[in-house]
Amino acid sequence: MKNIMKFMLLLFVVAGVSFGASLGFSQWRDARVTDNLDANVLRRFEGREPQPTEKGSIKLTTEEASFFHVIPNKQEIRYYHARTGQIKSLSSARTAKPALLATIKPRASDLTWSPDGTEIIASYGTERIYVNVTASTQTKLDANILNPKFGPVSDSVAYLYFDKKTEAGVISIADSQFKTFKNLLKTRLSTWEIQWADERKLSLLAAPPSSRLQSLYLLTIDQEGLDILIDSKTDIETNWSPDGQHLLYSRKTQNGIELFLLDLATRAEKPLEISSMASKCGWTSDSSTLYCGVPEKDSDDAILKISMTGTQEKIFAPADAGFVDARNIVYIPIQNALLFKNFKDGRLYLLSLAK
Figure 1 (tube, one colour):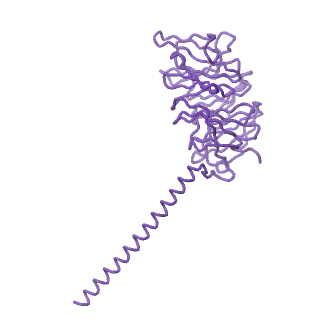
Figure 2 (cartoon, one colour; figure 1 turned 60 degrees about the vertical axis):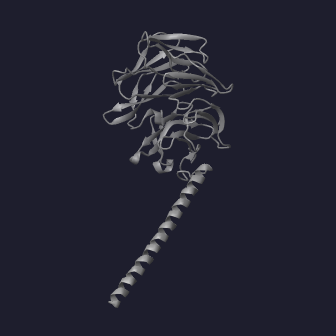
Figure 3 (cartoon, helix red, strand yellow; figure 1 turned 135 degrees about the vertical axis):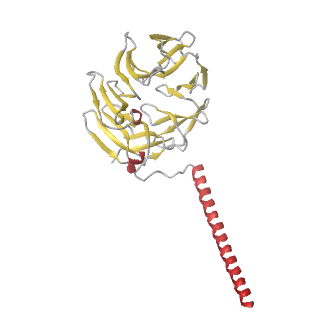
């Protein structure tokens, strides 16, 4: 009996030692995890988040940046922080932290910039607000003004004026204060998507709510009539060259969403045989070259260089670009680099093209 009692006592002691050791290791491990989490939070708070890769894209913002705009011939980027409504300015050369320029209503669904970045029109459902960033003034626009877009080289605004009561509207252009305007085209359609093809032409995408098919038209502001460019396709996105002579667009095909190039002078259309979207591409300022993010395996983008002469070259594999989902690419000639929003985290990145 005594031997049995000794054996039971020995088992109890061993179990207690094992439990104590396990508890001690668990507490040590939890402390290590807590320390690591605290360190990560501290690094994020101090704005020292690690970059994707040494060869990859450089993160410019540590917060989500929406509707960014590059000031022509400068290294200045302006963007909107949707959660707070803050308008900020940032140097693409990373010479200083982002500067607060103004604060407007948060959660805008769309935002358009004047070319010099001093004026904004922000859209919120049925409400649109004009903002003069320099003067720090805000004005609520007429509720019938829909889908306003600033022109590429002036403060002219293209928009749809639509009266829901009469179900009648007109596509017009006006100055940014909407004091003088010119009516261009009467319409019964309230869902026009408006872009500027160049300083004299409007690109109008008709998207009837009762149909999935879309058609793209061109409207010259000093001439009458519409010129159809794309007829009855689905999931159309457009990206005009700076000179307005070429249209890159994407649409749905049997193989998915693919890219096409349209020469405006000849109306010749060329399939690029690339599965991507027009919003994932950007033009050089001389309209000679396109850079596109093209998803590969795991949806990470390779970066392709596409020349108007017809050549295509993969210049960055996904690992070299930094494992990104690039949207709204802008070529920065001063730095020979690509600026884009990474849809994986909503931040702005810069990718140098220098070898």
